[in-house]
Image (cartoon, rainbow, N blue to C red; front, top):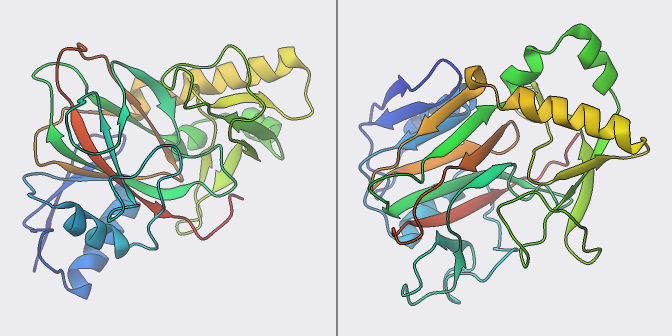
Amino acid sequence: MSITVTPLSPALGAAITDVDLSRPIDSGTFEAIHQAWLDHVIVVFPGQDLTADEQEAFCGKFGELELVRSANAMGGAHPHVLMITNVKDTGHPTALEDGEMMFHYDQCYYEQPCKSSTLFALEVPDEGGNTLFSNCAAAYDALSDDWKTRLEGLRARNYYDYARDPTLRPTSINDAAPQWVHPVVRTHSETGRKAIYINRLMSIWIEGMEEGESAEILNYLFDHIEKPEFIYEHVWSVGDLMMWDNRCSVHARKYFAPEKRRMMRRVTIRDPQPVV
């Protein structure tokens, strides 16, 4: 099987076609997909028709699947599947979310965040609900030498309280909510590239630093990684399977009207490597 890889933007992203992920793929095809994912940070497979089992089987080729940790899984048979949706009549447990969501790394508030996340588009609104992806390795490369030196050894606390507003930066901290400290700059375990590893939604402060200086650094980095030159905006179609590298890219959801139905099926892949 020979896949076709088509870049989506100068910043990051590629579409992979001429492959049916509902069927088993051979080792050569998988290696080509894996390399395209590393090269382009995010990949989308348009026009797929996947069951939950088939999505899990494909993701399982990249590593051990992550159990759903922030909300209920889609029934006992699929503890790795979460429905990201504002639809209430799915018949399965869901994460109910409307409107926009700030840029974030998935699960960076745990000791070991996931390596990758996938979303399969089951229903999409006719307007809005696009996803923005930012290449945080390219953003790091674009920093001045002075900024790179300033960030060496810094660590930031990442925090998320799903029970409160899960889409906006918190204004207060619940000590019982999941949180963890990670490097402000991390090194990719497969490519060796460095990436900025903070995000506007979940990175709260830099450890051991005065509040004013911490806020200055974080706000500069938030604005930096959200510059248009590092971003690809994905307009969803039903049947898209999107896979992103959670070690070097953040993503955000744009606004869509709450009366519009949007339903995505998420499966994530565990990262066996610590964040360094």
